[in-house]
Image (cartoon, rainbow, N blue to C red; front, side, top):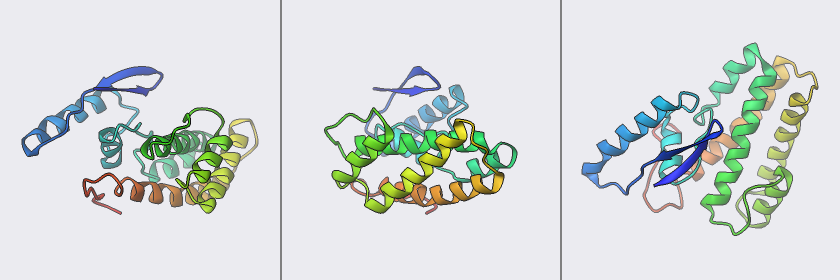
Length: 179
């Protein structure tokens, strides 16, 4: 069993290695978690993250979630995007089993991930730019809907690369049903 920190309160999620006859148990358990925690969608990507002992993401790794949010509230969309990107970087730290803390300032975390070879210099640079715009929006800088959509479009690159990362290096041949 492992704990997830979702919406500010710890929740326990049971996970067992699954044989073919245990898949139904695993699916039903994940559905129960999603029912209790409606703010975290049970997408294929979130189920994969939970299975790997990683934290699920607000969007379920669906960039359309932030596109729709940006239509009515660009700042809220960028705030949520920032949370997902931060979770993504912390998950990469855990997934690569890096020996430094996944907490602390994002710029330091990005630098450590790059130094460890977990992310490329281009990924680091893109993430820094996205974090900067998201932070500025959250601290009062005006962000138009168009600018928010451009940032979200840039973040889609990292989302796709993260989804690809979830399918390699874990010795179980998992592939997302939609690339």
